[in-house]
Length: 180
Image (spheres, rainbow, N blue to C red):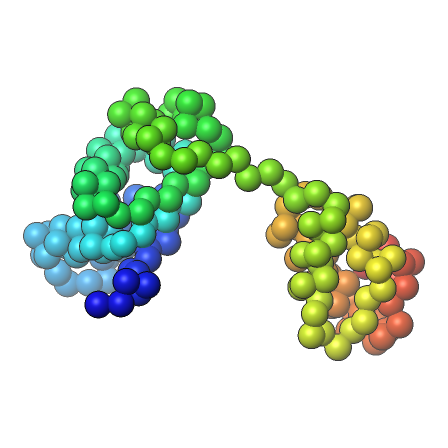
């Protein structure tokens, strides 16, 4: 077995909840015991589980219980568990205490919004290989005037490209970018 080949599963908390409640099996004709096995195999037979927006499990008591058991199973098997949230474990009051304390066992990393230089680098990376040339002034304009969310940066670049195509304009200026 290659030690670098890992089975990785990325899901949102909604995906986890839907799988747990069986919404994902509406179109399948499998019995409940088979579905339980499918669920356990999907979530517990991985080397790395990434679950996004864990705060949305709040209020779903039975789903939290299942995630607790899944977490313990993976942890006891020395598997990697990565959980993301828009707040710290201490601020996840919507989750059971036993889940929050487990989240504190690991490394907590605060991911800050990108600064100006990083936003410029992201923009340059996104426009690399495109047919349209964009000057540093335009990159700086976008980085300065679009929010700190990378999706907003991507959206502004897509709008600029679309506007350029619609207007049949290949000479993009700062004023043109402002218009877009």
